[in-house]
Length: 464
Image 1 (cartoon, helix red, strand yellow):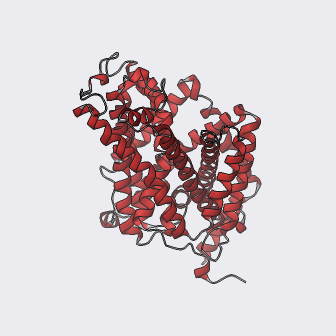
Image 2 (cartoon, rainbow, N blue to C red):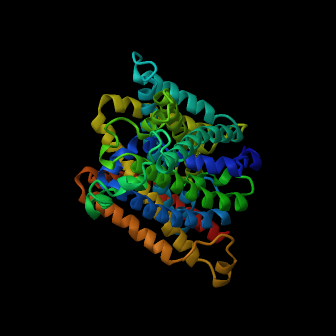
Image 3 (cartoon, one colour):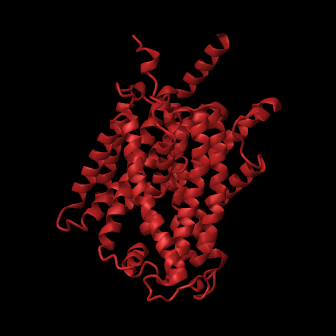
């Protein structure tokens, strides 16, 4: 006997402030606090250009997603849109690919939690903290969705307040010499050490794939669409605001860091955030920043577990995953999907400690998966528009600017980044493992007879 329809649906309890901060929290991860030094080494001050260009492309991708999500707000949105507009196989590949992408990302985040906790407890094993973080985040995700959204709101807020404080303090040093004996540092560091392009255009191109993946998580707004109050108003505002906030935080923070410190010294003496806070007399800076990056890792993992469980729920609804994944708890949480995701992450934590090389190969799939997800969003939106009559296109409530050129240019940019990944030795493995993972998914799709099931479903609707 089927449960009543209202019990099968996710609860629309997330408000605008929740989803804006969730997407922001997922995208502003540990990378900005600790990983930005690697990107700066590749491009020098020109990394600002790489972030700005990549940010513009992400804006168009998010507007394309927003256009479809406002018209059809469902859980696991881009997997559903791929299914509807590009075919069942595209939806299946996109859903499972995105699930795996975030499982891997969360494994990296909870592994990082173990490292950060050793700052205060150096004699404890890392795996203990990683396991504790996974259990805690899984339990949090079993709360009512509103409670989860509230917690994620505060998680993300800690990061944002730290970044804003750092930008304000940084501008105080640049303009007024605060913390620098009253001597204004100015911004000459942006061009004094080999110029604005110290490593040429090649350095900027090499940094692009690293920069693009700093934006990973922004598309999570689409996954929340099935649990948002007043989707039209909330998603519209969130898509616009999240893009600008991320761009300001990344470009703003890096502009300040590279103005105060020579770009070729960043990362050699510790985190630029720690150094900046210590300069103005905050002696507990290292502990504060360690706490912030700890919450950053937990926040990103929290959002990842949320989005992956919703993606499995959506795949089950489309008969592309076991039916049990679509079962909801009394609080409207896809419980089985949540437990399966947590168990996958548990295996990942074990793999990470057994062999770092295995883990490196697996994370390359996540790199490839991000480009796949964004490209699918653009392709689905192009097909979505083509299916509409000119009158319906005019009536769209939330349109992508400069359509269709913005979608085609963004698609070409993503293809360019993928080609660059193949060109440079360090990232080439992503273009080997990524397609291999997709081929494995296709084999499972046909071996399980999912294609026949979809043909039957189409025949039924046509007879109906």
